[in-house]
Length: 249
Ligand SMILES: [Mn+2]
Image (cartoon, rainbow, N blue to C red; front, side, top):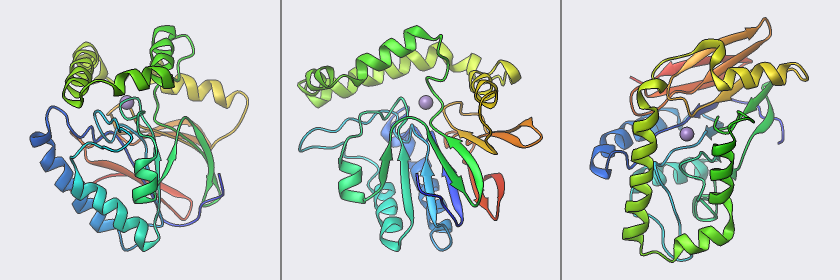
């Protein structure tokens, strides 16, 4: 990716639709207020995945929710803000709609970019443990176009309730354990340590954990997690070579 200079914002894990659309309205309004507050001076915005708790788009039809949020993204793009959407494990079935209609740039996987002269590696933050075979197999199955076409043949009412059931089950299985920050045992931190053996980065920026953190890896390298917009309304801003993890109050 081209080097980036300016005032750069990052956020992730809004999980709109969780636990239902009514309950996400307040979160959406808060995020809209935040986007309004940065619209004047942001040059770049990175959405680091799981913006939607479930997103699936069909050839001619898209989910009907979060229109105001999508409108805010569109007006940021219209003002000249570069908006990037790194897909998470909950919104990996975003195809061309958000790019074509809103003009954001969609990215899958991990990206390295120089921001204000600092080397940054970022991504959603899932699938970083190479030994988590079960997870990699499921992700591979979900990524197959054939399976996606099969899923698209379900009526959306069935498709979305199936997806909600799967999301609910996986959340229940992880929720309690995920609230605890495990330090060096965190899969993302293990991953960063592994990468740092071969390459250097000033910042690793990920989401997925729903726990905002700014963790010192080495004298020159930090791991920053953007947290979530369910409990924390947390975001990261990079400007003049500095990185600040903040909360929108
Ligand atoms: Mn996630």
